[in-house]
Image (cartoon, rainbow, N blue to C red; front, side, top):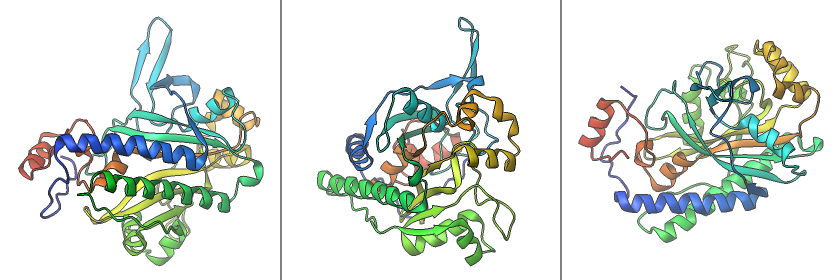
Length: 336
């Protein structure tokens, strides 16, 4: 059974029909705001990539992709985990210039996900990527980009409440910036997730930086990150406080992407030197790909947050264990 939480006294914020209208409103409004805030153009994207291309996202390094043979092509396909690497290659192929980028609807299957109120085996997100200059590979530029994304979220929330006056989610536009090491130093006895909840309870909108490398006290990373897309010194997660679930809700994982030097270092640290021979990694190590910043923004999670939902199954169709379905039915929570 999934790790289900049913908040005391929770009632679904809208009827099933009105929920669908609100989801459509959020998705259409936010992608316009995001595109304008970051100077992005919408493009089409693949559902699967070739197994040997090195383009699939390895996430934390242990998740198994959904693979299938393609007899007529003589290849094996993998359903994407995300488009983190594909987007960077697309920027080169489509000849995007510095200061311009792309976004797309990304749909993925993560078969090994541990499902709960926020996690499903089906992932839907806006994947975006933008070409930058060498001088933009710094924390100031990362912070500037995060503020623009948070601004787009807040503007969508404001518009949603005009269209649906019964919704009353309050978001803090002011972003609190903190590193994973600062969290471990402050709360060494808490788990990483407990630290996220503690800092987000205090500051409501949090930018958590530097995820992937080992922390000084524990010798363990705050969370796993694949070594071949984000620069671990220049990446982050964006959290909002979720008053319905009384916890931090991660809306986005993003960062300035690896250059040849940081890729070389992180592949060795992660014990992934075998990836150096893959086509994508060869291009990176030879400086044949543009320098970029990018990330993913969860569509269902954003809808959950802005509407005040308790379970991601209220805003997306997926597969759940029978105990979860029964418990939600008993609590009056309709799963799609």
